[in-house]
Amino acid sequence: MKAVRRKTVCEAGACAATPVAGRMRNRRKQGGVATLEFALIAPVLFLLLCIAMDLGVALWVNLTMQYAVREGARYSVTGQSNLDPSATNQQRYEAVLQEIKVSSMGLYNYVSPSYVITINGGTSQTYSTQANYSAGMFGNPGDIVVLQINCIWPMLTPLIKPFFANGKFSFSVAATMRNEGF
Image 1 (cartoon, rainbow, N blue to C red):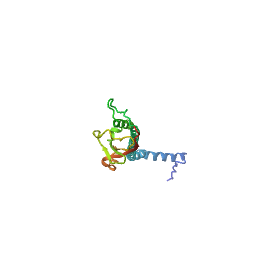
Image 2 (tube, helix red, strand yellow; image 1 turned 45 degrees about the horizontal axis):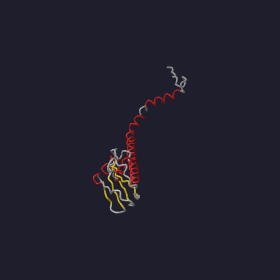
Image 3 (cartoon, rainbow, N blue to C red; image 1 turned 90 degrees about the horizontal axis):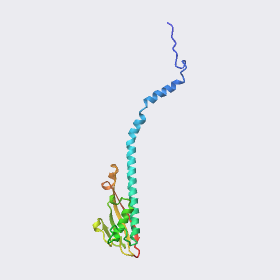
């Protein structure tokens, strides 16, 4: 019996195509790997993104309220009352609160503000509701007044809520001023 010699792939002139054909087979085997890896990593990535955004918004709210308190304090030292929304019987304290509300860019009602005001280093008076507000709440001419607002901002990302009391970011912003001689 005569031995039959078979032609190899290289003898047929296809030696150069063999590695490419091997790579094509490997690509077909790995076609969904990138999609699978993304599906496993995407939830963690989006969770971290939401946490970063939530903390960023909380910081922005803190800075915005600090700006609002500073603007309210700057207005209050003048003793003016022209910003009071009431056209008749304008009150200085209402005008100062209005300046704080306007400067807070709409966040005032969302942060549940309560005021702590200290006049001349004496005892602090807390104004937690509008019923407590009074004409002498920002002091008299020449008084040193510390205006502090305590705020509460709700956190939105569920996994970050346990790190804050009741899932809310509590912070205080303050400004110190000396009233002009109005």
